[in-house]
Image 1 (cartoon, rainbow, N blue to C red):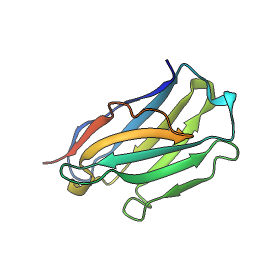
Image 2 (tube, rainbow, N blue to C red):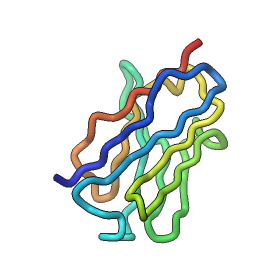
Image 3 (cartoon, helix red, strand yellow):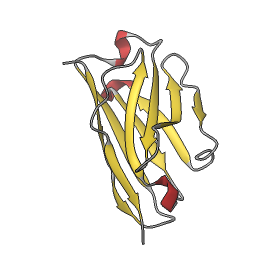
Image 4 (spheres, rainbow, N blue to C red):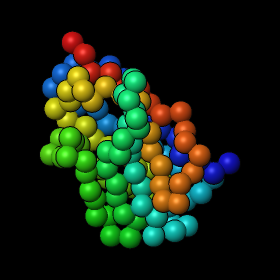
Length: 117
């Protein structure tokens, strides 16, 4: 089955860090280096919002203003995995985090990130 599986979420105190992983199953990143990979998040009672993306071809990355300077997206083609390094976490970063690609796949279960003291 072709899918992306998110992991790495948890409970962290404000100001802390977490690294999320998004691993491909049923395909490899080298199948198409033209794909972009994205992280999204959805907080309780809110719409899903885009967080960051990274290109397959050159590795260039872009971020939502709300996370710029705190989050870093990266990819390891050998491991078929995209990462989201999150630093200086805030309570408002609490959400379920999802990854997806262009062209999109069926949404996975996501991974819960809770920032709380």
